[in-house]
Length: 137
Image 1 (cartoon, rainbow, N blue to C red):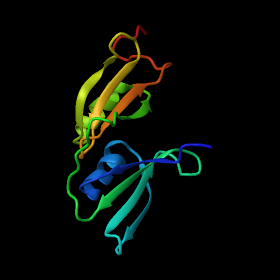
Image 2 (image 1 turned 180 degrees about the vertical axis):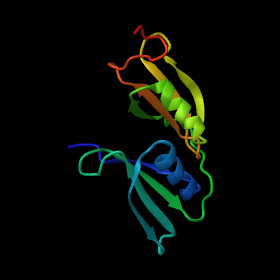
Image 3 (image 1 turned 45 degrees about the vertical axis):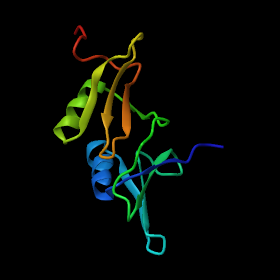
Image 4 (image 1 turned 135 degrees about the vertical axis):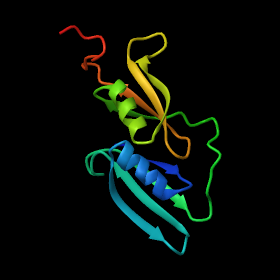
């Protein structure tokens, strides 16, 4: 068994696709309209669905906004350099809600960004990555 995908309901599919593909660098793997049901499914990810877990973006044509509630936490993405990932996200118009730095009560470097619908994405810096701001060369 393996996890195939996580589904997120989005209010503006084009804005969400732009965020996940242009800002976070995922690929649009497939997209299909379902006119009878008035919804579109778009799958994005870093790997194809046969080799990795992906996100399913569900766009219901008659719904522009969702109440995210307080049960959902975040999506985590491993990055080589969380500081640089935040800089790049901001340059591309993304919203960084917690700048990169060590997590509270720990040493793992993390950051948080927000997609156009308010879903939180955590950047977790690879354990073997060097902090380019404090490294001694």
